[in-house]
Length: 354
Image (cartoon, rainbow, N blue to C red; front, side):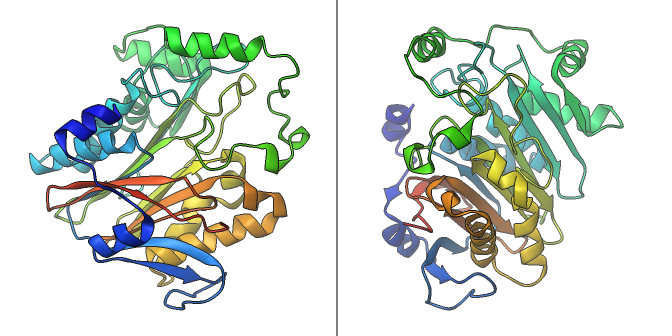
């Protein structure tokens, strides 16, 4: 996938400082509350500035596919929900992405369980949790939103609903993901799934996604309409039935087009504890810019327990005015965005705690 992107010349990769200079933004140093314009304390959040609209902002390297697809929909006059769905579908159907949809790494039993949610700027939303055998989980989540009175469907019943809606059942394990699971299963002394406390934070993967690199996306169209979406196969080798933040409204994503939108990636349990995406949108409602609102959420997570400073948690945020930002607890997080200049960029986000 990376080679494909490189050949087409869509993506610019830059260090945080260079990237922000190239797009007119700046890296803010923020304290715990309201330090939006203060160059003080330790935290650094990538402030992309006022990019304008339309814009699509997504998480991780594979988010370039989502941002590109979303912008293509918007440029053709499509709706923001279509942009979110179709952009994320590109990632869900890419078998080389091992943390989303087809080819996602399975749970401890070898079953791929998907979580996804979608939210419109008028607060309509839908989600599926622990969905098996349907790659395009974001599309099923949208059907839940638009064709039922509910917000969430879970497990076997989510699959039954998807099949009734005409979705195709398929084996989501690819040869590569099956081989990775079999290798993990045969490893002596492997960590007990779900027992995070038995693995000191310093032993956990922190900067590279570590099997939890959700695709989250935010879009804003030229008319001020917004939408957000998340899709993931969750933590690799998780306990069967484990659900993280991604399909939980207010944790993995939140969108209120009167204010803005935010979405998350990383260790879902830590994001759930603070309702991370809702916290960021409410920060913007109080007058913070997206960068300062993200800093506030990262501080809240870091202060809840010291070990969290060594665990990767990351956010993207977008205001109704077209201001964008991205922040991560640890180095290694990438954000992909596309704007009205028809250029897409993949930017490296500094680690808030180094």
